[in-house]
Each structure stands twice: as structure tokens, then as C-alpha cells.
Image 1 (cartoon, rainbow, N blue to C red):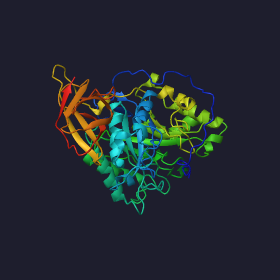
Image 2 (cartoon, rainbow, N blue to C red):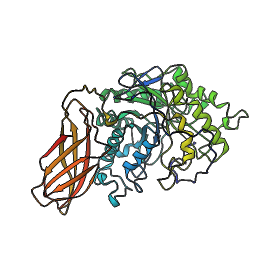
Image 3 (cartoon, rainbow, N blue to C red):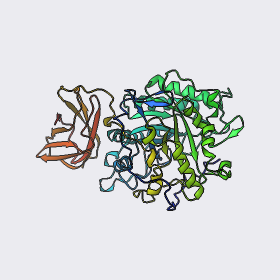
Image 4 (cartoon, rainbow, N blue to C red):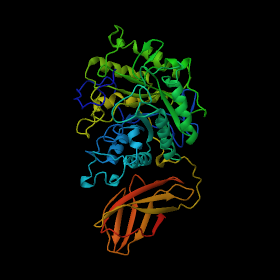
Length: 501
């Protein structure tokens, strides 16, 4: 129950009065926190240097649907989407997916390539597109949480497995993704399964239905191939006869905590919604909304307040169409603790959703996939938090060394009349690159027709590409990339040189 409308067609969002003071979209950074992989200590998440961080992000769904890719690329370039998210002060992307995207040959649908949009996604499978989104997010200082949302695109499942997608497949695919992004600290963690609900139990001991035991099996499997990741574990629907939102009931943790083989990697996650999703008894309580902090304390907030573990509100949202929902969101934002007062000693969150086409919540974007719902976004202003270092690296950069780089040139497709290629630029030195230049010479008559994530000049067969504004900075040992189209095809891959500038 409660979730059968979540992926329906979009609904109009009413314009409502804003109960919170409007202000700057992003909160001033206390420090350049967030580098490297993260770990936990008590109720806080800390970066590789031990500084507290706060996840303050957004859900961008679609990889879990039959499109097998984030939605909205039929309207816009994916880089412009991510740039807009960052400009609004969101620092983390939660990306839902289904196990379908890990099947061989799965390809995305619904991407517009006209006018140069999404040009570097042409010819890629769903995982290849995910790679590009992760890379670009990291270059902009955003972190990524992968969310195993559904076993397949057909819909939600109460348990972590189905007849068609057994537990063994679930775990194998989690491990495959953990290995795929090993060493790329843009991906900070994996949400093991979205919204377990009845008959899923917590602590009942039945291996077929006990979500806590399944989370231990899957979490330890992930950590066996990538021990740096955070393991994010949602709740269930019902514990000891007390029911709530799907995935939102973490009452059982007090008696039955999740046990992982690697310490400092566990984050508990809850979901919470308003009446636009479903009615709950607490919304009609005469004391509403004053009763809500006690409700949240009971279901999941106690874990934070008792310093047991970090708590991440992985989904919350509303159309804001009713006064009750407006009051609910204002109360919830206050409960999550304003960043200006509490900094990283706070609840973590990712709002549902960026997409406007979530039928029972709407999104931060309006139906044109471009215009921001400033009323809805404004509610979140006080709990937004600083972004993180760019480039996905976590190493130090002791000054005084000579910057250096290398480049590799790969042809991604060639149809005779033209071809597409990708160039990967890697920082091979010990200091961060601030800018770079890549040069190559074709022996034939090839001409660049378009280039993305870099600018270029061409003289005869010699092409010189220089970084764009967003990807000039490259940390030691990390990489960035750009791509281009050219004609005619059949050129082969020339030798390339890279210069730190």
C-alpha cells in the first residue's frame, strides 16, 4: 500500500505560500569537507579526513523503469540537469535502478540527441550512461548513492527477491556495481533495496522474510569487493504490530541491529511522506503537526538522537496541494535540523524527486523539465549543505611537483561516413591539474564536426582540444574525459599527447 501511484503521470503542483524564510540556495561551507570515501562515527558521517559531512540531495529516477535511464533526457542534456541541481544547492544524487540494467545488452530509450544534446551518450548501454552521469556528477562536486529500487522494471517488490530475480542475482548485481565503481569515490554508497514491506520483517529470524538478515548478507557481500562503500539499509513496514510507511519503520534496530564485517560503514535509511501519497492516522490527530516529532522519533529518529548510527531520509516528498502537506513539510524540515545551526551533526536527506513525473509528489522541476518549483525548493533552503571537492579524488597534493597528464583515444562508433570518439585525460602527476590540452594529428581528411566537454581548434589534420570550465581541475590519479564526432570514418586512432597548462 501507499506506493502504487508513485511512478504515475505527473500532476500539476499548486502554488502555495512559503512558510520558511527564503534565502540563498546553498549554505555557506564551514570547510572543504567531503573528500575521499566516507565512514561513520556514532550518528555522524565523516569524510576521509574525519570531517563531518551532510548529505543534502535529490532523487533522479528512471533507471528503474522501462526506459532504463534517468528520465528527462528526452527534453534536456544530462549535464545541464546536473549543473542545475548543483546550482540549486543539492550535493548528492540518489539514483534508483532495477536489476534489468545489469542484463547484457540493456539499452536506454527516450534520449534526445538532436541539436547536440546528450551527444556523448550515443551508442552506450544503460551502464555506460550511468558511468557518464557518475563521472560528470563527480566533476561537479556531487556524490552519488546507487539505489536498488526494483528487481525489474515491472514494479516494486515487498521482499528483496522475486521468482524471476532470486536473492543470488540481487547480491551478484550489488557486487558487480560495487566492483564497477571501486576506486571512484563519487559513488559513496549503495541503498540495498527500496522500501521493504509486509511480509518483510525485522528480526523475526526467518531467512525468507527477515530483511535485517538479508541486509547483512548483501551488505557484507558488497563490502567484500569494495570495503570503502557506505551500506544504506532501509526499514520495513511493520514491527511488533506497529505499521508505517514502506521502508520507514526502523523500530526493530534497537533490538536487532544490522551487523557488518567492516565497522563504520552502516547508515540507516527511512522514507516519510505526506497525504498526497497516502493518509496516515497521525495526519488527523488534533495535535498535528506538533505530534510529528514524536512520530519520527519513534520510527527512526531515535537512532540519531541516541547516537546509535547516522540516519538518512532517503525519500520524502509531496505535491504541496493541501494545507496538511504544507504543515507536514515545514515540520519535517525543522526536525531535520538547519545546517546553519547544526552543520554535519544532522539527519541526512535526499528529496523525492527531481522529476516532475512522479504522480503523487511531483518534483523540484515543473512539467517542462526546466522551470524550478521555487516554492517546493524553498522549503528545503535551510537544510541544504555545502558541496564536495570535485574530481572524485581523495588523495593529498603536496605542492612543488610538476603537473603532468596522459590521454587515451578510443573510437566508440564508426559508420564509414563519420565516427564518434572518446578521449580520457588522466592526471599522472602528484599535484592537481588546473587545466589541460590534448593534441593529435590525423593522416587523412578527417574534420571534427562537434565536441563536448572540451573546446577545440583544428589546423589541417592537427586538432588541439582544451578543457571546459567544469573539468579542467583533475586530482592526482583521477581522470576526466571529453568526446567528439568527426567525418569521414575509417581514420583509426592516432597518437595523442597531453599537456598540463
